[in-house]
Amino acid sequence: MKVAVIGTGYVGLVAGTCFADMGNDVICVDIDEKKIKTLNEGKVPIYEPGLDKLIKKNVSAKKLIFTTNFDDAIRKSEVIFIAVGTPPKPKGDADLSYVENVARGIASVAKKPKIVVEKSTVPVQTCKRIMQVLDCNEGDDNGKCIKHLVVSNPEFLREGSAVDDFLHPDRIVVGTDDEKAEKVMDKLYKPLNSKILFTDIQSAELIKHASNSFLATKISFINAVANVCEKTGADIEKVAEGMGLDDRIGRNFLNAGIGYGGFCFPKDVEAFIRISDKNGYDFKLLKEVQAVNKGQRELFLKKIEDSIWNLNGKTIGVLGLAFKPNTDDMRFAPSIDIINTLLEEGAKVKAYDPEAMGRAKTIFKDKIEYCDDMYAVPKDVDALLFLTEWDEFKKIDLEKVKKMMKQPFVFDGRNMFNPKDMRAMGFKYESIGRL
Ligand code: UDX
Image (tube, rainbow, N blue to C red; front, side):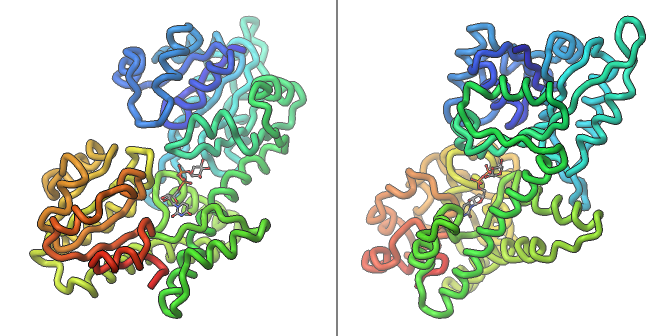
């Protein structure tokens, strides 16, 4: 099948590459010439395990093309995925101007009917708007109005395991009111052998909001329980295990910590609150989910201050900056709020992350010290913070670390170590929801 993917951000790049690997002829389009040049040189602008190899393989097999030529890509393709950014506006609603521009572009360029698939995370009823724009087209070569078909196909991939998630999804959601579009989407996804749920368009759009918001709720719920554990002497790891054994609950997304970050959950929860509000429903539950999430960072900082007293003039080591392991993404990462507060309080910060150092430098500039490896961080620090649960941190030589530190305070924001073992080694150790 001939496929165009408009937008080579996280979702567009992974989807385009995987569709090519599934045997389709894919043209990935972006307005960013520098990015397209980088991709054509075989370099990948993001860190995502497995993606670089897959891109190289499909580019050399001529199944995958990167270009800035929008018009050509539209004319040559049967199915067009819209995967452009929908960044939050100052009040939290998604900015849909890029989506609208793409739809306008398709309406003016296409001379034959296309299947236009919305893959960016958008508010419910966006496809209706896309349809309105597409219906105002310049017509075919005889001037006859073209009937394009619109499909909602939300993406559920996670950063860090994006390729695997795309190729082995739990489910594929396709929202369409048209039988032909349903058949084409069924054929496109057939090679994945996954469950495809066909729904109406609005339901497909809402499944994405509801799924991400539910997962964020699960995280805030377990974090709230962790706070009660600390007050009552219970252990959140045991509580999560006991809850998770109930099939109806499940153990996934019950890891207590310093809260969720990344580009999806914070943005999507906020957008769902705004959409509900606009449609006359006050989604108070989700507002509390946000409050708990923010509170986790504050409680973590309070623990540090309660233990080491004044932060002014203290040196704090930070291991882990990315919002989660296996990515270099720092968007809405808890590390940003935590480090900024430490700096405001007058602390010096030294930090290391296996992949996010480049991004960190653009955020903190010369305000913090950047270390070349994880063992450079603990040297002469008053406290060591673990903010991302990278595998290499789990295997760190703790005896070596302890000898280097000025004071043996360790604050584990991701419950990576065993409190008893840490204390037996002489650390003053604090984690989340465990005494
Ligand atoms: C998420 C959704 O999982 C994915 O389906 C959607 O398409 C995009 O948003 P992603 O943002 O890549 O994916 O990361 P995810 O692995 O879901 O983690 C999100 C955040 O929640 C991270 O900050 C992570 O540290 C945190 N988290 C996750 C917890 O604090 N506890 C958990 O138990 C799980």
